[in-house]
Image (cartoon, rainbow, N blue to C red; front, side, top):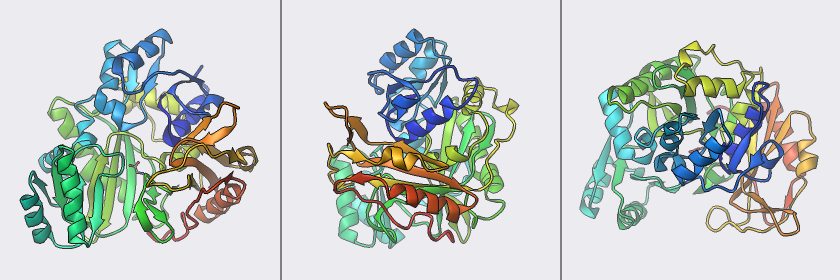
Length: 414
Ligand code: GLY
């Protein structure tokens, strides 16, 4: 398991619960993952280092969590050693690594998405802002660790974000704003066959009521009781399968997890973004509900045999994850604060405390080491029951200056 965040802890935990998995190793991992995996101090961004580790462990499967190692070519290096890898090649990961490339693929595959203009100069940005009107959507073409998109009615803020992206040497996309609730729909694919997961929803703003700055995600839940009953079928037919087919047609098959961020507009579901990996924190509730053995599923897809997979099995009910964030997240998250109450929270029935930004200090105490510290994840008979359990568990977590949203999964009307 490559990576060190909440998504990777949730994946490592689910892999460790698969009876066919003999052992899980993680690079570099985190203190939560250390309970289910052996940790290795290997840089996830160095493809040859990851491939050498996998070879030395005689790994049957490498699962790459975050986007940056994928864009760096980790999956290519691992596969070059003859080891199965769940995660797209560097070329295929461009679907997340370049927003302009993703638009090109969608246009070729006739996948519904918002109109966009690719802008290389401030004058082009200004012209595009005026033709699309408010709210303005300005995106960095490249990977920007969740900080790439600004949605604003303030023209000067839109221009300033574009200028920042240009200063960093990136192109800028100015896009049509897509109205309607957003849904995260993930599919496991071997480059040909698409196996969808349940739809989920995340909360990107730092404060209750969707106020405050954008974050990596402050909570999530699944499934979505309010979503159209045919959402997954429609999205497979109109978005996921055509995209996978187009990537294969180009000679760069996408094998791994295709993440479609969809806006459910009055004119149907449209793609807001594609990602080339599991979403964080949506993965935490999704894997809490998954009954199919994750190791078997990911290995089968990595071996190009996804057509042999039965539809995924899910536990009845719902799951909710509430993120506990460090003081001053997302601007300048404070590190080194002691984290207390994890064992008490995790002792609740149907609760898992997933580590994201944690570390051990010199005295072996659990301390904060990143913006999103924990994702407290609970399962219940429905969203309300899962939510109640998650918040009861969150109440045990004590971190100086930390905060969480109180409205995760509170209004499940979309
Ligand atoms: N939850 C948003 C993301 O993973 O990109």
